[in-house]
Length: 151
Ligand code: 4NP
Image 1 (cartoon, rainbow, N blue to C red):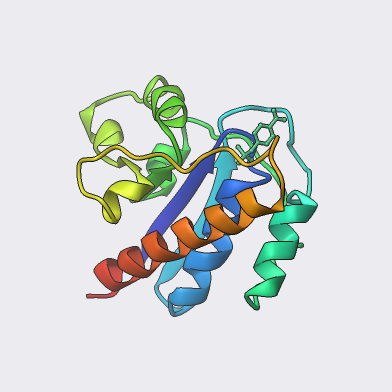
Image 2: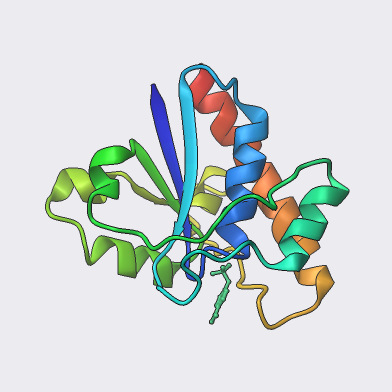
């Protein structure tokens, strides 16, 4: 079983999209995908309506997902922890207990552009185009991740 966690700040915009996209590219047998936020603002919340809408546009239903906060036990539960930006990276690594924990944490766009440390921009305060942009970035990254983990 390969277990993959997607992490952003609020767990309502970027990481629920990443969760839905990656899940749609993997067989349900042998893989688990989840998401979490580093902040506690949106625990129990459904994804932002704009994330739900852009996912729906591309045939994915993420409306049943609910926000939760990243916790230290997630280092034990997951093999790979993909973060959206360097602030998420810093906040997750802060909770790491050892080098093995840290080695699981990766900036998701480094799968597309190795070692460039590009970030998935936070679309929360922007318009719908920001969500479309985020969707396309995550779709490209998740395609690569899905190929990697199923090989
Ligand atoms: P996310 O976006 O990290 O992609 O879920 C955000 C959602 C909410 C907030 C910030 C970012 N907020 O400040 O409430």
